[in-house]
Image (cartoon, rainbow, N blue to C red; front, side):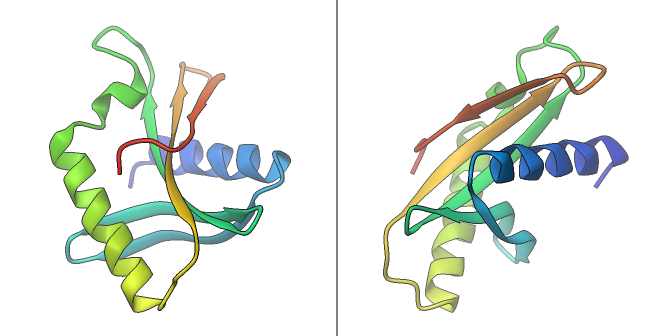
Length: 113
């Protein structure tokens, strides 16, 4: 992971904590993919993909989550749920961090899966 990617994930985690989320795990890797952040809020498990772009010249940060990436994320989330024997409610969110100063954060809840 690049320094920019790490900083974006750190900012996303702080952003979520400030909104009352509990961060459970970060950077969970499976053969099928990676989950950036696993958090919980209101008895719901939340899987968060964090994306960073310095500029929107070629699209915003969240536009980089294409169908191929979504498929990998879905496999990783289902693997996590299976491995942890989780049977409760869950959702998938995305956080886009952008700007040369990492000054824009966009949070979209309950997307993709």
